[in-house]
Length: 343
Image 1 (cartoon, rainbow, N blue to C red):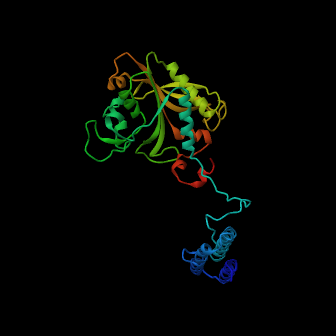
Image 2: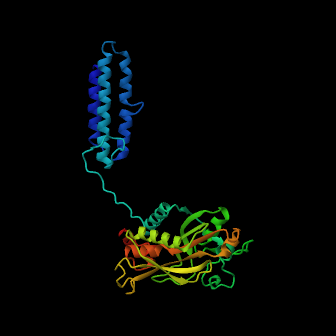
Image 3: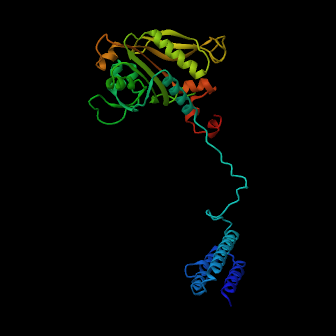
């Protein structure tokens, strides 16, 4: 029998055995018998060395073709047995692709990115801050003495452990702690905004959470005025709601600013005419703000009377609730996939 006939017979024998395979274990045994390093095909390949020189090119091509055909036959048999496809095997590019569902960005993530971009466009630095804070940075340096109601255990999460040089450890109750840390590190001019999580020891309902996010912004320089504060906040709110927003200030009290204000803006839902969103008043209460208190500058070591500045703080969840018409703050941490699929 010629070498050519032996190759043809080898293919026929292999195909005959493959036709009766019933499991992957048997398939592996037959594959090793024919295509293994010491298999029948390898033994037949060795005989090419003894062929006449003029026949070697023809026989070599024939041997390679036989190997390809056997490999394809074994792959086809494996798919028939296991129902699986070799990841390295050729595939049909004309078949329709699989459809994969994509995730949904959390509305707070979207809101945070948009607010950060707006402030960057106003030449603010976006900084991150620590959530586990000491009493001095969280309260005392912000002109909140130990007798202030905000220091009460009902409002603050105190962390167990010995008090350090700057007081006990607390989960920060506001992002205002970063006013102190930034001003301790940098000299004016400063334009910074902090967006981060804060913690309050209070009951949870549709408008209150024990853990939520705040946007804290502040500017320190020479000759900063209330006009700069109003312009900055009006530009920020106009960017968030993507339309020109009218704002107003009402006197209010916050320990770390003097004078202090509540900022309202004309309801974007009814354009100030009055609706259920603004409780028929035409105005929506938005945030607290004011000119930075001289005692805060004193705490960080700034020279008396050299600098002025403004600061403001607002809830990121409140912005998102107004932007998207969300009526319950608990949805943000509820983990309900149906809520996220809306965004």
